[in-house]
Amino acid sequence: MTRIVHKFTRRVPEWRPRLEPVKLEEATREQLDALRVTPSNTKVSDYVLTLAHDVESLSVRSPLFNAIMYDRGGMSREERELGALAASMVNRCIYCAAVHADRHAKLAKDNSVTDELFANGDKADLSPRNRAIFDFARKAAEAPPSAGPEDIDKLSRVGLSDEEIFDLILSSSLFGWANRLMHVLGDPVGRKETV
Amino acid sequence: MNVSDLTVLKQAGVTPDSTLSGVVSMRGNIIGMTQAAEVAVLRPKETGAFPHDLRAAIAARVARLAGDETLAAYYVSDAGQYAALAVPGEPDIQHEELAVVLSFVDKIANQTRDAAGDDISGLQAAGIADADIVRLCELVAFLAFQIRVISGLRLMNGKNK
Image (cartoon, rainbow over all chains, first blue to last red):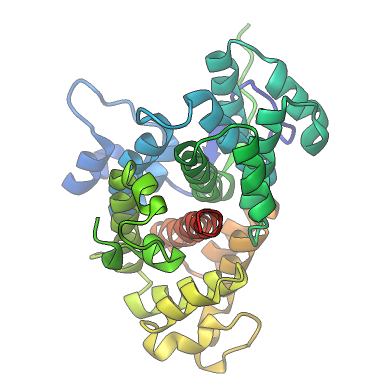
């Protein structure tokens, strides 16, 4: 029996698609290219196989995702993860929130920020810099987006450069996209306990 | 970067040689890939069940649901016979078969957290193929991204003036 996970956790669940993913043995050349399937790399997740139904989008999205989250300069990776997490909490994407809370904790070498966010949500006790980052990303993720000039001013006041602010806009916006795939096309399910 | 060819910069009013243009040019690769993503979801080679004009109408509708009339106007100009669908809440008797698609679009755009298994099985029951469900999600999901990048850039633009 698998169980759908409804509560935020740093323990990354499995992702179970709500529709039939592309079957690797039936994939077209274009799909295989987008999936980067090579004879030595034939393991592809159900999530990526699901997105392979729209291969033109998948081909553009993977490098865009990596550039926004990992390109050098600007905002630290840890703080980009906080932007991703804030959006995922707004959209209640349990899977995305788990992955990016876990990455944040590992990059920060500290669980306390994500523990606090999962325990107290919007009312979490955060440092002024994390507070400004989380509040902007949370409001930007709402639908319609509700971040205003005062939220941007707050980011500058706690010391973010314009380059960092733009990176935060990108990472929190990116999860407006990712959450609408992950949270819509599948369910987060508990991993089977190993006996 | 050529601002006039890049939707997010044009929509946010980022002018060449401005302070903000200097900031975003550090991420010029990302702005370029964002434009390529717009092409992939609005004007793909393989359209599935959603031709380009219908995709433009859905994009205008999602922009309007986000309160972005300027972006909605940009998309509606390509919506052709589907232009009426760009107005949320107005039933369109000409395209009644799209009712289930449009209610899915509205929910995923603005009530994302409430998405559930029933939303996907409802589309399947209405005869929408799995590949088309993924195409529809990518369209709405990309727009959520683009709308927020534009909204953030407009805020930065206001700050730098």
